[in-house]
Image (cartoon, rainbow, N blue to C red; front, side):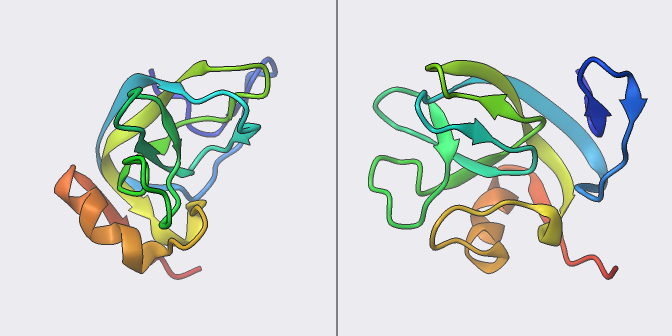
Length: 124
């Protein structure tokens, strides 16, 4: 389901600059609990032992250091594990993404490209 730019409950379209183009494909995943709100556009990785997703941090050693997807819409993990959608393919604005500690567009670009996600440097 494509939810880009919609405010929950209001039915108001609020466009953002996250998506540049391409064929968008999403997948439902589980996000690790206790990590607050994972925002739309966050670059996430998958924890090898559990299969859960969280914001990819370069210094992690649990598998999540490898970026694999981009969050479709905010996911609140405050109360525990939560399901949400991630993009697994498409073209995205590198400047509109949220990167975890130690990551930048340059450090995630190749890993995401290998999975079908392409980052563009969009001029404002």
